Image 1 (cartoon, one colour):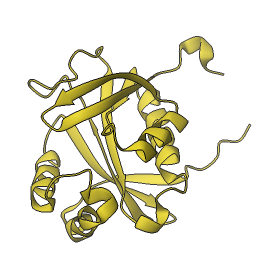
Image 2: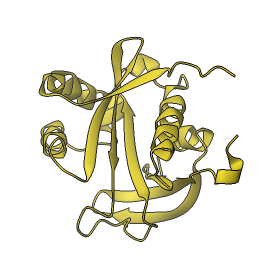
Image 3: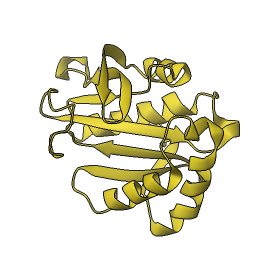
Length: 172
């Protein structure tokens, strides 16, 4: 069996990405779920030097198409997901280009990324879309996530979902 080349490329956010990120945060399909663009960009800039969060750009066919971040809830003081087992990482994703929304990229990006996280030792991945963001929930279900519970955090209501690493016996 020959391994397929990864479909998406993940790279760390750089300061030169900020004009593009600002443009994406202003898109109605993202602005509906994220906060004010200036505050969000400041948070992304802070995350660039943090130990708990890794902000990334997702590229497809050499073109930036999405923002993705992973975080360790156990490294952030008072994080609401510290009830999860050690080895849990959280992720957030937004497809930046409106024409690419609803075309399967979200679930495919998430699946490729979580597979890489599992390969590097993560035991559980969590994601927390707004309960009204039905398209995101469907994409995460398609990527293998299952509903755990509904929570409320400083960011608002969350449809809390998880995906556990395959057991060693599941690996081929």
